[in-house]
Amino acid sequence: MWVNPEWVAKLTFSWADGTQFSFDLGGQMLGGELNGQEFFAEIKKYSQVGSQPEMYSEYLAKCYRAYSEMPTRCDHFFWVTWHPFSQSKWPTLCTAAEVKASVLAHSSRCFGEPDAAAAAGLVNAQTCDEVAKRLWLIVLSDKQEELALQEELLEMVWAKQKADA
Image (cartoon, rainbow, N blue to C red; front, side, top):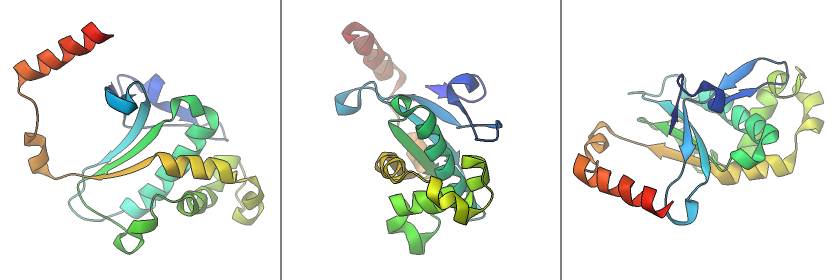
């Protein structure tokens, strides 16, 4: 697992204007059909809604930009939160239409084009679709942190994983 700031190079991508952004966390999935696939995650431990809707929009623009730069590394995008947000839009938060709207809202950073109307022609619909397919919304609670393997079991899992590698 890659945690920012220790692994900032693996978690960092560039906006069109040359500035950079990074995800909070990343890594490779282990086991099953997802084995070896990479993920990038944003972690928002909020106890109330706050500014999550605006941050989620920016996050979708980051996902679009990251996928545009390095699609082979962008298998999954996780938004991890402890409080639901945008509940009236919840069913559409992981759609290509939501990705496109977010990209247009952040068009100056995604494309270097501050005018959303002008940027509309720059948005790649296939990229929006691909990003949408890769989005995960994960809502946790503090109690879930207690759901962890005991250390000796975790060591057995890691030993097996190394042996199978």
